[in-house]
Length: 141
Image (cartoon, rainbow, N blue to C red; front, side):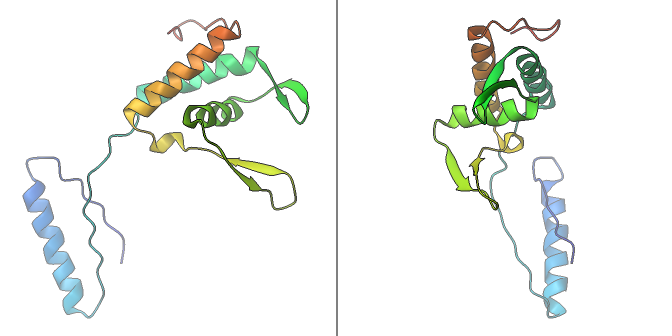
């Protein structure tokens, strides 16, 4: 059976839910187990926020060096995402790596709410300003 996710936020929500209920009842009549889960959908970041985040991280990655493995170096935007999102939480979880070393267990930005993403972008912009980053055209705060 393929998992189905229904978002009930439209005029046709009752109809869609009724169809899902009939489908679940049909599965039960065939002797199959069915799991039903109802929860509130959290509004996650917008595409515009995602674009802004990557633009800001790219500017920082091109202009700010950061200590990695004991030496100052430029790091990729993806690395800056991990550094700054860990800073946003103000609490980091550290796991031991499989072959030694350590792995910081960060926060997934794809699961951030709109408000959390605003905070991350503001943190990144404040960090960049403190480190003299010149924002690219169209990436200004």
